[in-house]
Length: 478
Ligand code: ADP
Image 1 (cartoon, rainbow, N blue to C red):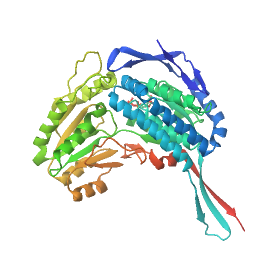
Image 2 (cartoon, rainbow, N blue to C red):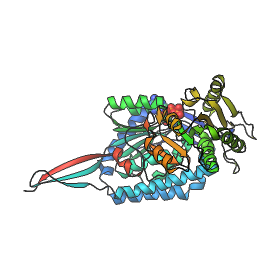
Image 3 (cartoon, rainbow, N blue to C red):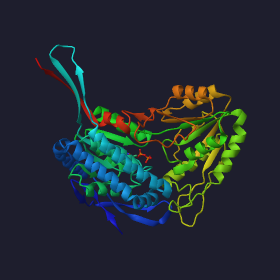
Image 4 (cartoon, rainbow, N blue to C red):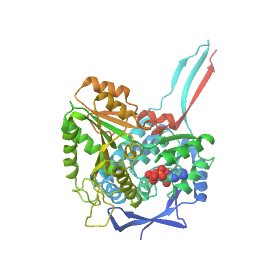
């Protein structure tokens, strides 16, 4: 059995305990044993990162550009191998996994350029003879805590800006996906990242993650994951004076009006709800349909949904891979049972038996629901979407906003009037017109409102807000 160690201060470090990593498409397929960091390892990583910070923070933008650009090229160059590993470990389809690795490479290349674009400002002073300069400096050491659903892209979009602006990183991936994290860090190491600048701590959230939040040696935490963990991290960081950026859940609405091109709308709903096994924080989990096309559209969705091929992530014909693990499968089934108890009608949602033993669940459409039902309040994070019937656009908008979340929201319509009104009035960080709620670009901001997000936006040039600190300098030139 292959064993994989943590990376601390430029060395691969074994641990007393390991965790076995198993393929959710084939439970007989063991990927490897992965180190489990201890609190002591967190201290070691903090010491290494703090020691590395003074010289790393003073590197030239060109040095950081060269390193990040090389990492981007290596990710793209090794895309097929890494994509296969990602699909094998996390369960998204091979095509989705290949696209994710390519995206991570593009992100590193974008932030390579951001290292060069980190300009300041010069302002005229209100006082004579004084000049004013506003510049940005690196913050220090960032803790990066990530979820399992995008095991290469999310760490990339947090680590790349942290490094581009001269910070050091301690990276803790989710328990389910250490292999993707290990490969990403080994690419950074091979590309020549100086010792201590990037550290990998695989292990338990309630041990490693907790210790990262507690230690005074980490200046900021960027977290993506569940609402409950995010809320806990947020309050602790604030009380300890740490920067914090949280990306949490979504309960994203997709409104379908009666003037929409229904093929376009069905594509957007099927993609948004079921691709990546619905395990995306931007998934379209609430499909809001006006009543005069409701029955016709539901019929079309059910037909399309039932034709989706569920199976092993590594089979090229598969369109929906397995659910990530047993706990998630149990959660998906529990929410379907609750929906039925509350009076909903469920199409699909049964277990699927494939050649290999895995966590396969048929996509499910939950109809006859109201906005108050649990299925429309809680994030399920599986291949499950519900349908809410509304009278008209005004009710659709009200239902779209009737949620504690506000990450992404979509509308399918041919009307400029409704599209423009929705863009302005839906309470979400991202709005999609005639396209799925999931699927975003990397050079523009990503993030939401309300319980979905906290702190500055991620991605694009907006990422610098979190990963730099601003200095205002006054000089008396008189
Ligand atoms: P999920 O329920 O989808 O696994 P979590 O929010 O629990 O989502 O996990 C997201 C990330 O947060 C993972 O890397 C996990 O290990 C980490 N994590 C879990 N609990 C804590 C905690 N108490 N403190 C810090 N990180 C944690």
